[in-house]
Image (cartoon, rainbow, N blue to C red):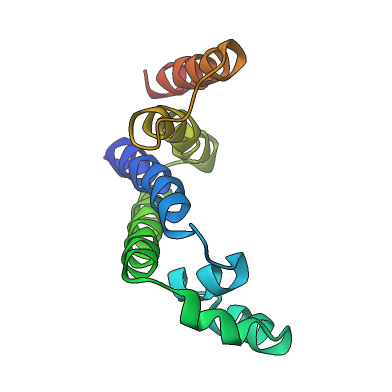
Amino acid sequence: MWKYFAVLSAVFAALTAILAKIGLKGVNSNLATAVRTVVILLLAWGIVAFSGELRDIKTLTRQNLLFLCLSGIATGLSWIFYFRALSTGPVSKVAPIDKLSVALAICLSAIILKEPLDVKTIAGGLLILAGTFVLIL
């Protein structure tokens, strides 16, 4: 059962990167971090306030807020499934499967963000995919 939770963790981790990329457009990264994470909420808002970037909150658009919130949800779901997988499966298997998110993010970046892929990126993604299947099977 832990394998399914590890794979779900990877899917949501991949979505986190894609949604954050969309939500970050035109927004300070410290402010974006504060919006999308609960775990480091106090730290992120402290950095934003201390550095004087709090005034940039006016630059957030509805799209920024929407995608940063969606990214935060994807992050939360990723960690819920990751910890669930870790609670019943070995770290030596769960953690590498979770890193399948890298290959998924590569694919999603090409499909959703229309980012160009070079040969090295495709080869790396395929190697990650192959390694993940070796671990699962």
